[in-house]
Length: 265
Ligand SMILES: [Mg+2]
Image (tube, rainbow, N blue to C red; front, side):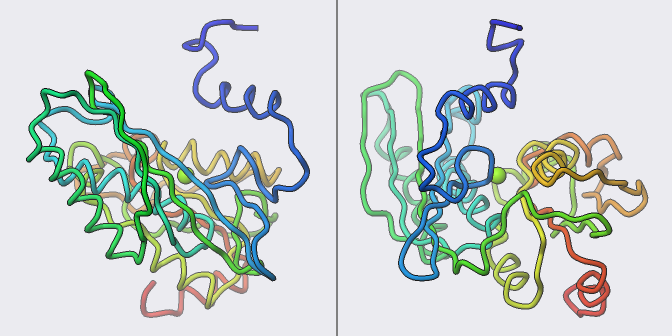
């Protein structure tokens, strides 16, 4: 077995942690979905998710500060959307250096706050630590009606695969900094249809559809000419680029026929 993290890879690492941590049996979904799911008030589930953004890895000092803040919040919102949930509360932890300009930091918070407000999220608190590089960690709590909860593991043989928007070249086009998390689309889907599985695209159509297939224990055929692509995006871009933050979802044959008749489609 490989011993270095670089050989194990991100998904291998998540699998190992998942095995090591085990389960208390209380959670509905633990590691291995877009958010964790735990029981809440009657017929409701709590959704918990967290995402970390590091200077030098996810953004640089040249990235507009408001866009950094937006992305940190929006990426978490995208995971709540992927579960069919409604976002509620956030906690924000930041690592910043004393030499950082207050104006820059304020703009990061402004970007974060604006997006939080837009989606009805209240930032309840957080933490700050001293760090040479900027670190932003947003944790988001959402809620889903038990019957509206969508996971990666319900796709069935004969289902059809859909995405909420165009894919590929997110980084080159700047989409990854200004994308709108698909909360509204997700709510529409859970109210009007019965998606059998859903995930948001952070690592690319191939990898993220792969997660649905693995968790649902099914296979899939995708048609090259049916993949909606952004502008100049090639097939390779659409399959592997990632950070599209669109939703992939699966529908039964009947629901697929129905959604294709909708104006929105
Ligand atoms: Mg996700």
